Length: 481
Ligand code: ADP
Ligand code: MG
Image (cartoon, rainbow, N blue to C red; front, side, top):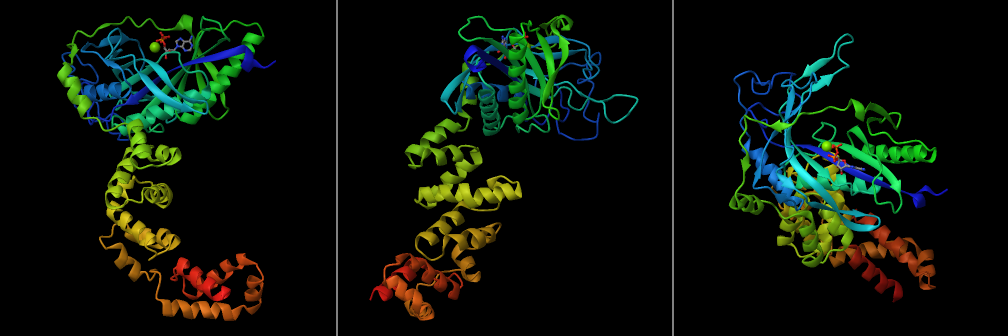
């Protein structure tokens, strides 16, 4: 039985993104990652009697930015609610979140899959604070609590049940991570927990209107795990249905080592959060002017850059897509293009040798110490035949890093400038011809491919400095004479 034909998986994702503010959502405590436990915890984070929360303006602006990036409606009035539950890592006994009136409503995110592109519908984006962290593997006898993270600002990005495969979910999370980084509201680092995802999964008969009972999988800390957990869960639910079993609404966890999910709790045990508006916090009021000014502060989005790369710079879809992966790369291209009009060459360089350096050094393109002007000059050196690509990529490019010197000057010092001095070239060409009389004969009898052999020989003699274009011409003249 082909289950693909019979069933349709439906997925809704809830992504928590830690906002890149310096301080917490309602206090001046630092949000820095990895410091000594419990050193970033003020009475406000602990909700000591008499302490009052004060809203972090920057967090609000970041939430609005993400809302605008996702085409949400920005609420001119929203407010916080207390979500009450008991857990050791929640010092207040409640989490400040948004419930009935989130800051961003609706919205959509464009994803590209193997089947084309499509908008994924969002339900909302709301602001909330993070809880602390329980650590169970330090002491054998006790659990430890680190409250440094308690009160850190998060946005929760909630989709409608509008994803239909593990691949789509993967693409969606990839897109969200790219977007938050692009507009600078979150570092997108999943290992450090800056971006966390819960997946809600259900399966229905194909064509059925009503959605199946959903299962929620928590603790997904990498995009790969999100995909694998969803794949596992879809198969598991289908097997249950095929066996005639009823799906129970439950929360499950994913074990990456075993690649399985397991049940944590069923719905009957679920919390009643007793939400109510937080009496200590006034509503968030955003005027139209304020929303517009935040909108105007946003950079061009990846899809806008994509258009620019295709239309203004005439790049193909692959190059345009790759250049839009990171804002710093797109911007570096644009600056380089001010100095050099060989756009395809710029794309090749940025996506080739430069990207390789970025990966090797684990830095962003701006931290490499490479100036856009040097890159443009290098490309022009290649175009004018003064240096060949491989010497430029392997020798000149690394030498350009953190170096004020002009590429021509550096290439001279490195002794990699190509010679187009005809006297010198002719000497090498003659030598190569003399060295291989049998190959000359073979060439003249029609084995034209042997030209490469001669060119290679000249390259060797010149230690890579001979301009291959001119050498080939010279060789052809002589061999065909
Ligand atoms: P809950 O009240 O259990 O938190 P919500 O209605 O808030 O449920 O939805 C939480 C997430 O689950 C959303 O992303 C939503 O799209 C998704 N979701 C809801 N119902 C389903 C379903 N039947 N199948 C898949 N995802 C669902
Ligand atoms: Mg929910």
